[in-house]
Image (cartoon, rainbow over all chains, first blue to last red):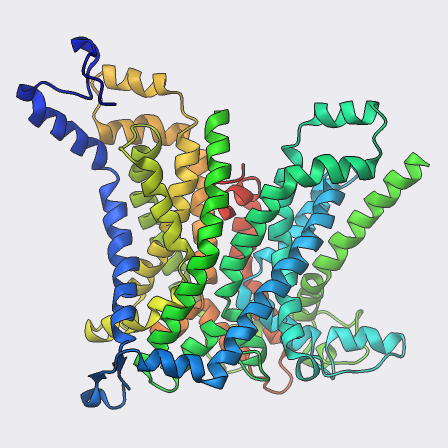
Length: 313
Length: 274
């Protein structure tokens, strides 16, 4: 870009001194369409994070605003030693890992089933996508009241036919109850990403392997899975980003009780119910740090896929 | 053998489709049952159908009417989606057709904002809204939903706009067209399907949002998901009403999602998967 011997006609990069204002003007003209969106994003998303960081160093209960004072890292100490909050960190990890893994495996199976031709494939695809298109609160209500209800829920109703037990699903296995509803909603998401991956396979290569006598299993392990790796990573990381932040299911199904409170719920609770602004902010900052770890990996995966697309184009 | 296996796998696919859809089908059926038929064990599959659940949901039984919440959700989702398109479309142009320097860095900045959990910014936004007198104001949700969806829209649109042949835009420039004209008359018509899919996905995310709406709105600006949270604690026989409510409030999302089906993956993976 810093070549000094370019022909004068084709040198938009190095303008002559006399033309510099016009070049700068042109650079701004190029940038202009981008600026509204960029400035909007910085103001609405970055400033609140800076504010959260600042508030997290204050002892600030909104019921006693006059007693607000700087406390250094006390909030972090309190957050990190508070058994409830520690527990919610563990719950968040458990919930995220379980839901992401289960929906990824189920999504892979469904994507493999849908990748083949069969009668009514379009209809089955539509049926499978539907759970993802139910409003999250509505989906959680559906599971809580219509499926899990111990007296007249569908699960116990169906168990009734086979003379099975009539468990109270939410109180006996609260975390699993939340996870099952989330797996139901997120499996279609994983399936769609993995299906796109399957359909971008090199079919000539697979045919060639088949001609050479490779079995379906060998093709799956040696060709399909390596090709899908990026898509599995992408699904896992995007899924993690969304599920780490999940609030709707926990709030609706258990209201954070029975040991299911995850970090977003705890942050919500500590500021909405206990009015502890400083503590809530410290917990928020910790959530951010946790997400940055995931996001770093996610960005790397997306950027490698992105470069691959760009080099193909 | 091969035929048997192929049919078997097709059957398995159908079976899993039905299993995943079953809760929704059951929800739909229950919404058309009377409350006493909805709460039986074993379930009454063949009970008489009625619209009572829907009448009850729309306030016939003396409960709160869902209309204000439905209207608020519509306003917040549609307005924020339009604002997103207005901001993202020119930005995507500057990131795909007439590229700014370091355009990939800018793209990844947009993406990174999507990875920071919204809950961490909740408190300062709440405090700001309270001081600015914007609590329980639909405008605040419009702004927040716009910031929530802008990165998705920028990524999706730049991947759509990058497919437009440069020659088309060059030709318009040679004819002396200025940027707004080029965007409106040349780029927009070509990328219309992509813009439509982007709009539908942004609409879905705004319509679904609960956390911000729950904390930042009250009686005036309450949205449909917040209205649904009124059903969290059980209140006697109310299954048919819950099902009717959940279904009605999910309908716009189901419609938008199926309309955007082909582009859904691209949007959800922020344009990384085509």
